[in-house]
Amino acid sequence: MQLTWSHAVIYVHDEAIMLDFYTRVLGFQVTDRGPLADNAPDIIFLSQCATEHHQLAMVPVRQNTDASNSVNHFAFRVGEFTDLKLLHRRLGEMDGIQINPISHGNTLSLYFNDPEGNGLEVFWDTPWHVAQPQGEPWDISMNKEQALDWVKAQFGKEESFQLQADYYAQRHGDATT
Ligand SMILES: [Fe+2]
Image 1 (cartoon, rainbow, N blue to C red):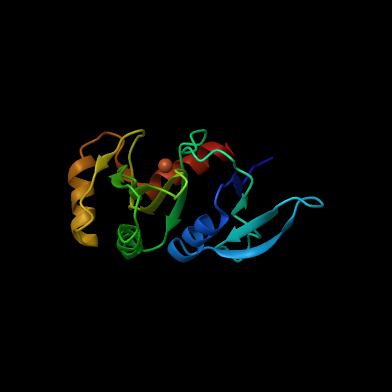
Image 2: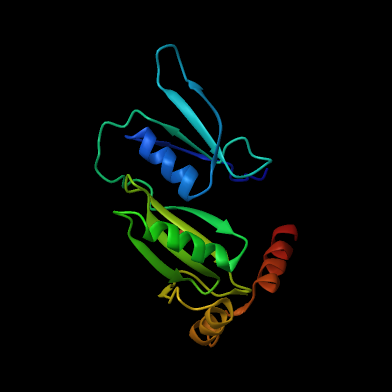
């Protein structure tokens, strides 16, 4: 048996604000919605993946308006370094969003909160693996080449530092032997 991650379902307080953030700012599409039972509020399904009905769903029944604290963060991968720049710009135009650029060596990440205080990470893979956990703030004004040079200078002396492809080939070998 292998479990492959598919989706998470979160309780939300303000459906309109949360849907606007997840669709307009983060780029999700609403793929379905409907009541879970007679006279119950809709569950709203969201996805950015053509082969996943929903990666995230919202149930707008949350009374409490305090920041959610059961989940540290959800993380999403982007395919291009410039996606981080675009997202950083969009988030910067919003009130009440704290943005923390952190690199784990194997990623260049943006950590931020959604409008109800749920933690989010959007990351771009570097070509490398390095042992975790660790993280260093990085300068979002760098271009891709500068950022990769910085990652290599910051993490490259560590014993575990290697190409991500080699690390995953090793993991794959361990899993199949
Ligand atoms: Fe993370």
